[in-house]
Length: 129
Image 1 (cartoon, helix red, strand yellow):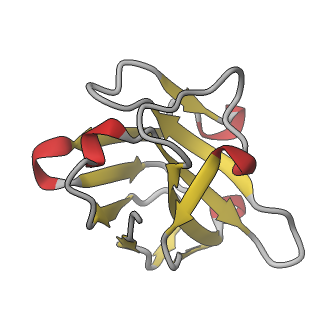
Image 2: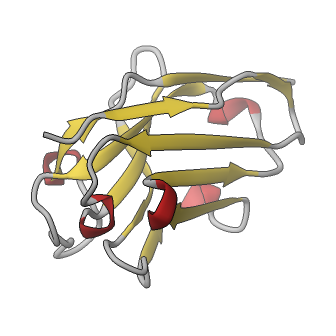
């Protein structure tokens, strides 16, 4: 069982930056592919970014955040990050970190909600215009 705690959300103005963190209880954190999702009121949960297990050589980003957001992981600290720059009001949502259902699991195509089996509690990001 992987327990995840995400943090770092806040109220910021458009153009500002935030860094989200996701701390994992699992000592085998390095063996899990990880992801960040977000959900705005009335909308479905959507992938923001994902990173493969181990050295995280492969990353994924939704088109709207490419060039602004950067995902990374520090396996020594059992922690994943999402650096968010140039934030826009449309980035407003609850952000969730997630771990793949299986150790050493990867993605056949774009990561999906169904690929992930463990979730953080969510952290609110609000971007004012």
